[in-house]
Length: 174
Image: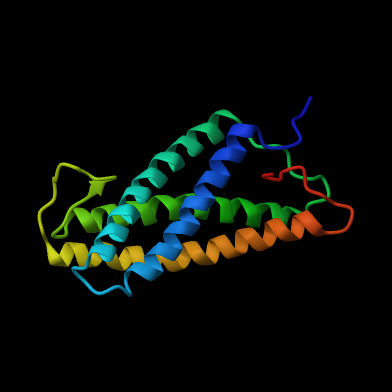
């Protein structure tokens, strides 16, 4: 029998990722407006960095799960171009999650403060290098914009496939 929807683990990992990433987007936009060297800013930056590491870990677990547990089949009425577009957006979303979190991690590693993972200072292997940090911060900014665009596209497609008359997709994540 062909499974008709994602399994529970895939659904939980998807929504855990979504909640963390949405929180991090809001946090990232807010924390840069707080004056430097103030406790709220430091707290938000440390939380943002910690959650970024969690996103890397969850994304790697998701990729492993996806590799070992293929998704349900596409709806038979779905056109080939639509399937291909979905595959591209999904692939880019995974790439964006990894690039975004990794570029933030590397920017911190080559910055003055390093990373405290939920309060525990991680060992430093990079040195304070403003030019390298700036490169990774630029990647992080471009990645944030790209991730937001991909999330919007993904969400719009999911809503479209959920509400189109008489055609509830079996590939849903709820």
